[in-house]
Length: 608
Ligand code: SF4
Image: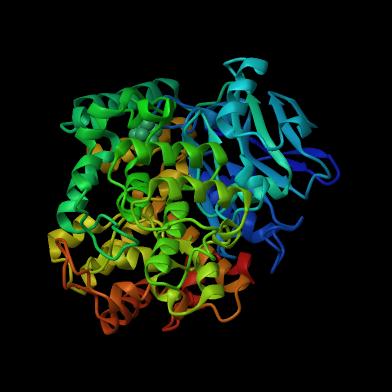
């Protein structure tokens, strides 16, 4: 058995009903470590070239990492990888909560769902008992109601991952929900689970995880917990969670406002963390083993409802981005998306785009099913969320994602479809924050923030500057930050509490028995980054530089109001950012990894 691993790869063929178990190869653990690394490897190697994301050849790969399920702060993250139905490229979404630890206790490093079931099923795992069971009666149910039902049916010790009507109906950005508020949210991982007709995964495990040096692990784990407990910002972080940044984003012009037409919102104050805490939060909620829980559980009196959240990304995308300033309204929109199983970032983006189409006269009430889609109309937002999940009327168009919807509608609406590579941009307005803009442009799944969160660096260095140091910072973050997804742990202790990353190394060494350095791990990060870049190129004819361009709004339309009024990044600077980026990555001028680079990263054999 491999120290630190569950030691098995489980394959579930939904077409035939066959379930197989294989040993996790030591070479895979050495070269790709776990989590997102395993997902990228299996996707590239096993999903055939040009496979239909909604076809039987696509796979959904769920992977834990060597820290997952162990007493390391936040070590409860797993990665969900697939070919994205939203973008046609690589998708990888991270899930927190309690699911990952249970997966590891069931002895599983990667769970690979293959084929398509002829009828709705759920996957039942209780240690070595792995079965597909009929879920016809649950089809159509919301995630919150179903998870409650399944907790009662199987018991609290079982962990549940479930899709909602969004995933069942093929919404391109459907999520997978767990623990009443944690999601594998981005890129349509829930869409793929839906097309495979898997309504839920019900999971329980009791196995031990082998550890090379128990005493060393105990000491290193304790050092990490102590560092979190003693961190200067821990109180503020646990009080507000990710909403800690809302007021800052508003002040510096990064808060997406009315479909990213500005970065500051006149109604922003009632969305800030302290106001939300006072108005709706009833308790804190965290993932497995986390000493600094960022989750906030909220009660919306007006709607007689509750939700985990909203987090900053949801506040940005479903609050200011839609012109909504009442935190109860935003939290209720969050709840609807969670229950229907849809990513709040993409949902906020497609609705923001539709609202702008309406305000510009591109849509009339005949196009919106009679909805008065003005920014700030909360009832129209709620109605449209429901229509997207059911693919009704305008909802059917928006369910395709903002890139495809804008290409169908045309009339200049492509220019304010805020996306890169088909993924809707998350909640940082980047008119003049060049490092953050580059982070979105070159992110491996499309315009997502969590690989390289560089906006504070922009402010430190000078937000509009285009300098090699900024590009180097983005590349370092892209190689390093996703390693937390590889190790199966949360990155926020490092990001938000400034925990010394070197404290993780003795823990990793003691658990796995292997000596690893951050230099070595960053090389693994770079290997995965290049592999996923090659995946995009393999799957999409003509893939290259033009795919890395941001929404024209960021280089053509300066905001009229707020902290960034009058500012944009010039198109020549956008191109310059790419020139420097490709050069520093060792790629050619069209953004393709060179043979020398691939050889240096040990990828030449896998890719040929
Ligand atoms: Fe989960 Fe938040 Fe803790 Fe990270 S910081 S492990 S996301 S509760």
